[in-house]
Every structure is written in structure tokens, then in C-alpha cells.
Length: 304
Image (cartoon, rainbow, N blue to C red; front, top):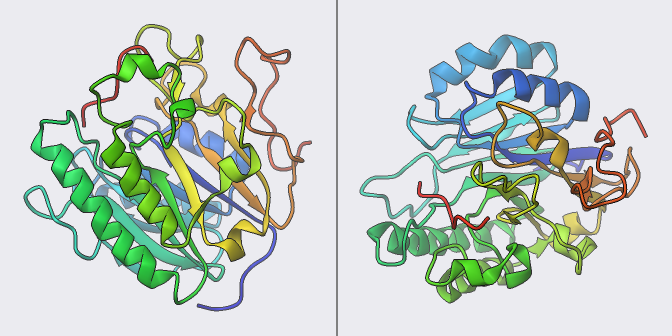
């Protein structure tokens, strides 16, 4: 897999339509300066993604691997480091009914990185829920094999809140997906395959969300969920110097309903500034801007 790179910023972001967020994504790349970016829900076919972003990403030094069919899925990895051994799709994908573009992997700086968009599940009595659990079981097999071969990170929208503290009010999710024992058990089995939730390892007791519904003022009220995760093998987790949610990318108009999760390995260019930057409006510094690299709901889960 090659020698590991040092001083690496890795991020994951459900962009919720790359075409609709094109300007926001480019602005964010220039501000946050990530070395590796995992994107989900691009909603573009491979050719359309490259046509839209190829020049902008090339000028910024990014290599690109994308896997999409132009519908509501689509995943990508952007890397200013190496981008080797690209694999599109999830081996053992149970399909719905056929395989969907929800997973892509590449080796970046000595780390095998997966960008993942786990099925939503919709409702617990929907066939999509059984598909979600089967998909997670297939992912666990892939991860268990990969962890025997070297450093691994799985990043993306897992559509699961790992614990009750990862949703704004667990009583609002009774009978809903994203918080069921079966989903959480599937996620726990994935972690048991050799991964660490690096944000929770760094911020075990803090309120941290990555997704806020567009409706009912969920974002300004901080009625959110933590469903975008960065899971890593111990050798990578030991290199983490900062991990945080870039809430500034969720602010304003024309945003995704998710915020990026940023992981700094080996050094922390902006300091250990998490867990959510800037903090929610109830915090003491809600108006500050999220740093760049060179500067120091009550509506239930979505149906996709």
C-alpha cells in the first residue's frame, strides 16, 4: 500500500447533489484545504461529475475517482495525495435489486480509504430496511478482510446514529430507522472488525451532530443527528490530532443538509478546535468563522 503520508487532512461530506452545491464545494475546498475528501450523494453519473468538476479539481491538485449513475446515490474520493487501486462498488452488495453506487475505495497516502453512502432504510417495515442491514453485513466482511492488510478508514454517511446521544431527542425517533437496535448492532459489528470512531474517541461526552433537516429550523435550533462517521484502524486513529465538524459549511443558503467531518492526522493546523466549529448559536462564539487550514430534528430520518 506504500508508505503513509504525514500531515494529512481527511474529510467526509454528504454533498446532497454535487451539481447543486458546485460553488459551495469549491469554496469549501479552498477554505478547508483537505488533502483527501470523501463525497456522498453526488447524484451524478461518472462522466457528468468529471465534466462538471475536472478543471476546478485539476487546478487544485486533486485526482478524482467517482462512482455514480446519475440518480440519488453517487460517491467519490478526491485526493491531493496518491489515488491508487481504485475499486468501485461493494463486494457482496446485496443490491436493491441490483448493486447501487454507494461505495468506492482507493489507497491514499498508505491508507485504504472507503467513501460510503449506507442505504437509508426508510422505515422498519420497508424492504429497504432489510437491504440496509444486508448491505452493512457485506461491508463488515470487506472491512474485516481489509484490516488484515493495512491501515483502513471508512468514511461517509452511515445513516445510523450510534447512540442515543447522537440524536437531539431520542423520544422523537420511536419506531423510526437510524436508531434501531438492529442498525446499531450492525454498526457495532463493523467497529468490532477493527475500527475506531475517531470523533467519539476524541470527544466522548460532547453533543456533536453532522446532519440537520432542512425543515422546522432544525439547524439554527441545533436539532441534529450524528450519522456521518469517520472510522479508522488503530494505527490511523493513533495519528489523529484533531477531528471536528465544519458547521460553517452548513450555514447560509443553498447548502447540503450535512456538514463535513474533518480529521487531521499527525498535525492539527488549526489546533484541537472541535467538536463543532463554529459551535451552535447557544455557544459563546457562534458568530465566528470556521478556520481555514492556514488560519489559526423533530422530523425523523430522511427517506432515501
